[in-house]
Amino acid sequence: MKAYARVIAVTAVLASAGGVGPVWPEDPLPPDLPYEHIHPSGAFTFRTPQDWKVAVSAEDPLAVETGGGGMLARFLFKRENLGYDIRHVTCMLERLAPEEEQHPRVKYEHDFLTGESGDLRFIDSAFVIDYVKPIGGHKKWWQRNVTIVGEGVSLCVITYAPYKLWKKSEETRLLLDAVLESVKFRDESEVAPAPEPAQ
Image 1 (tube, rainbow, N blue to C red):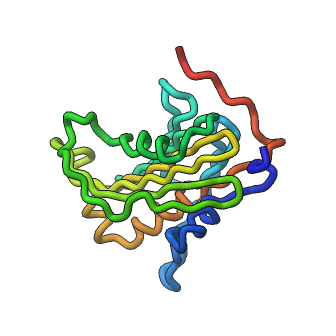
Image 2: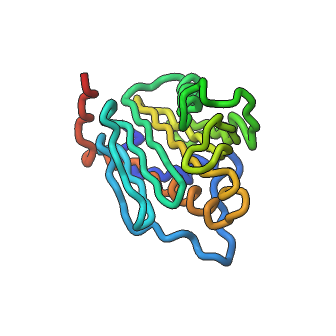
Image 3: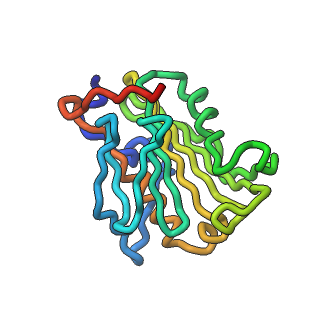
């Protein structure tokens, strides 16, 4: 795959949309992400803070979740080149509770921002959603979905934070951006065959 012939940071894809990606202020410094993790597919890596835990879904070996300090990030990878808008809509339904436990109204911060980098295309949406019951002590959550499609693969990176935490804490916003920015596709020679989903 041409896309795997070079290391591609998500930042490069986001930058093509006119600066959607993070812009670090002079103070504070960018968050420290000392640990690099290889996705089970071998297709990409991502970085996390020292205290974040990483877990692979028992139902889908290509679905990975990481988080700490009340924040979460999910990585949903597939070896199929779906229409990126269709894939994005599906990924936006990855919520923290079933549909019946969500209030129907969603407030968008931005929606369907698009861009491309080489053979990769992306869509970026962010919104606030209210849940019927508290999750981790909070009913109102902020969620961002970035979907990247191209070269026979698709990746959804979804970040979550309690809305109050995200709204009031610049550190939280920078950290979630940094985790997203850390995603890098690997060279084709390093990519192992994807594990088969559990039956």
